[in-house]
Image 1 (cartoon, chains in turn brown, orange, blue, red):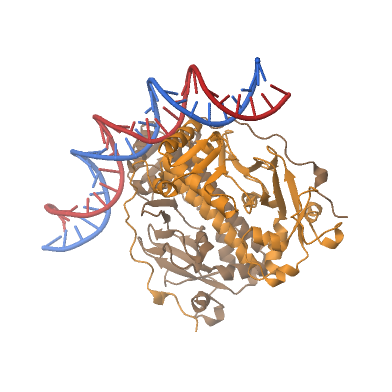
Image 2 (cartoon, rainbow over the protein chains, first blue to last red):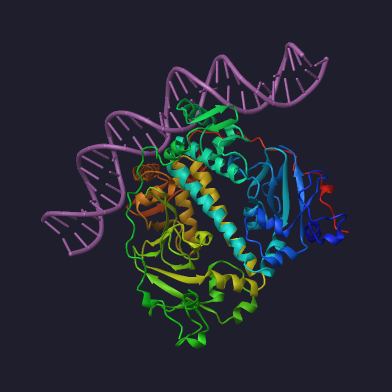
Length: 281
Length: 281
DNA sequence: CGGCCTCTTGACGCGCTTCAATAATAGTGG
DNA sequence: CCACTATTATTGAAGCGCGTCAAGAGGCCG
């Protein structure tokens, strides 16, 4: 096991023909990325010290339909998506699938495998993908070695937790229409952040997969896409989507299914009196 | 800011009358807990080195209805629940509440504040509570200092992420009855783990709060509790619950609202051929 | 005791699921 | 290249689960 860990991280001197352009060339399947590239992908600020690092992380290529890791498999690696689109799938105890999210470039996946040392979900390539292997222990060790990198990692995990919280909130309180609108806007933002068009894009997943992700049936998803298209807010041609009215979609995101949740009744007093926080003397 | 950080962690020599029984006495509001006690609460294995540590963490006491931290407030601390029951509440952009969970003894709260350096949710005491302040930076530093403690922290966050994933899955796919049954069983387990009875307990939250947590209305929650009581599976007298048929409840947990999700159609091929994982030489 | 809040229970309606049939598209082999 | 099949998407009709509205009952506290 420790040998498999060490196999994905090397000093470039031990590797044939390593160049500073690692990760940029398009041919020759296993590429490598430097620590700096990893940080850029994860949106972590890069310090000068990191640029000196000679750590490299191996790429893996997967074809559409292949599985990066599966449920129950011993946890070994985190992965960063370098290119392509995946789905992350959870299975409940009776074999029903539930799609957790659709990772793409820059997303860190496999975090839920840290607990119990076994993956709790499955990552499947929706099209040809390049992912970067990052052994957890290496990440932790690197985190210790470089200033503020460890906090950046905690940040990432906190962000992931937040994303999941918002998802739960949406599933619990939003109408089907609002969920679909959110889904489209969210995709739009992520595509835009990657430099693609945020107005026009191709869905990489089926209606069924969208439904599973949003807690809806595929028919409902299809109907709502048609309905949004009838209103002129979007255009749909199979998996090709055009957003015509982003503002309109954003309006829709707030619709509960008529339900008004707890009508704002928060505790007013904020904390025990400040003097109870004893000062050091 | 750094002064407020340091104020909650001290060496015992600087504190009046610190004793090894810190955190056990019931009078005198701000108590202190040692690193070892923190780890025990969080279910983190304790090493000998930790027992030597002279770090102590301050307790805070809150009365029912008081707010430990609120949304948007600058993130300073993580908190560990020492006693009592809380609710963690998220607000969407239009003031609608959504309850994320009900933290109790041993739970680490405030994690979602790490990202953006501001709390994304609000923690409110449902009854009188004791919580322990744990400055994030101290936790990180301690994690570096003691072997395997940092991985334990990552473990905790991974576990929290997993919990939220399961919650989202349940909200998206389970019937109202299944959600209520799950909720009761989950509470039961947690009470049992704390040494209380798992068969008979008092709910600390209202029907409305349960509903918000489960993505249901208070009426539905009430109706389902009544219905379960009619079946004899539980007994309900206001907030007092008795579980008569745990096995029966567990059966109910798997019921979709008739819906059969994606009928098991996973990718079979697991990985690119193993030889692509280049070995170091 | 009266006022307030929480919980219960009923009647009704809507949103989404379910079932079913058809259409559009992609993949496969001759 | 075109059939042939499998997969995916669309659309309609019917049913039901759960939300909504409303009224009443039971607890808690001043």
